[in-house]
Length: 327
Image 1 (cartoon, rainbow, N blue to C red):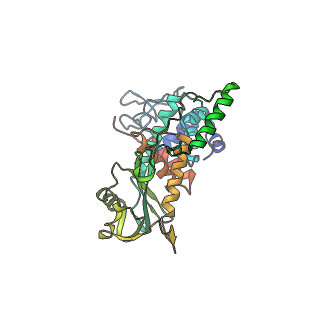
Image 2 (image 1 turned 90 degrees about the horizontal axis):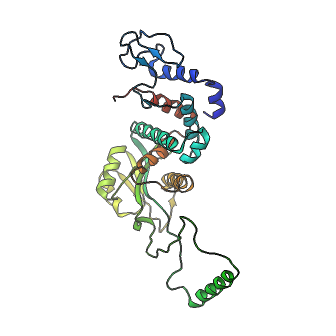
Image 3 (image 1 turned 90 degrees about the vertical axis):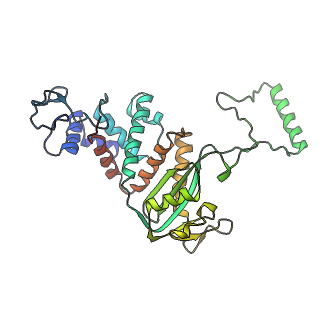
């Protein structure tokens, strides 16, 4: 749902509360503490008093947003803008959109990512043509001056620097952008960035996990966890970690040194999913902490799997917000 639809369907805080109560309790509102239906009329603060346990109750009590101080309408707006952002959005952007502090926006977003991760656990087994690959999350190495750069080129650049510095131009790095040289930086599987392995069903769902070691044992475990091996054929590149996959599943290898696709044998679907993650990480978040990375991956997985119905995604997450939990 977009913001206009939210404003029209839920114009007041009370309409948001009533809809949340429907999601949690159904037709009859109950006490969040003792499950009693014997409640007082709604008070000015929109809460009820339970006539059995004598406690003040609301739809957020013992829920995933227990003790929230934000209006439910703010949560509704946050869900709308987040579910509409295919490649994610920064907490700073969320802060500006819903007019809260940055720490609040950051906490809200990660709460929603945790709910997305929970929903991802209910994905059915993948089957049919499935593709598997991995990517590496982190900064990309920049191209710096190589040690073997021609001496004449160095002298020309030094001369230009001297000329423009004499005219008052300052080329020193500013702020947090030191542009330090790292001649040992690597790309691909030689990088120090964090690996993420993924499997996608053609025209279906995707699963992805942060994986510390890309070994056959770990990749095999992931296939067995998410794929119906008897009803599927696996397509991968020629990475050595996939070499023994034929022991558990039909397996076709595409060597990217030779080709990227042959008569439909390719890993284009999983590569497209990696492109979404990479553009989201680099374009929206810029960098993510390793311990929070699984939450970010879960967000991209959830949005990809619900890409055909944004409204269903909104209502599903909203329902999860108000599900009772054990405190």
